Image (cartoon, rainbow, N blue to C red; front, side, top):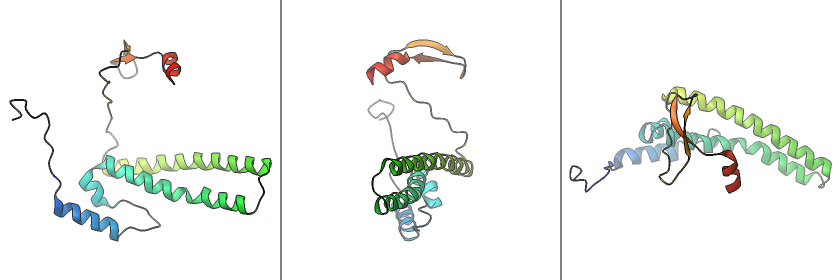
Length: 154
């Protein structure tokens, strides 16, 4: 059917036994302190899916810090401009540390899973109409869209 172009893509079905094993491992070995993704998830679904769940788990764990600080700020203080400013600055510092820690964790996981050299090439949408130009950084022909037009649409 592929040769006759009646089917464009073919995808394999899930291995139900393996999927059940991965699910049981994830559900029953799930720790509140690690919020981790078992290696079986990475092995079955691949690095991109596992990285997504690692990020969600890491983000959830890191949100505990501003949550506790926010509750303490609300309980023990009135909404004065100084205290709100202090809380805003705390959130800025927290966000900076969060991003830096995630970059490190992401690099370690990418190295461990062998996805460090993977690149994501985004396909240009068919209705996209930009001017063609040579990009000297990646040494390829790309379509460029003026920044002022992008900002105008936003």
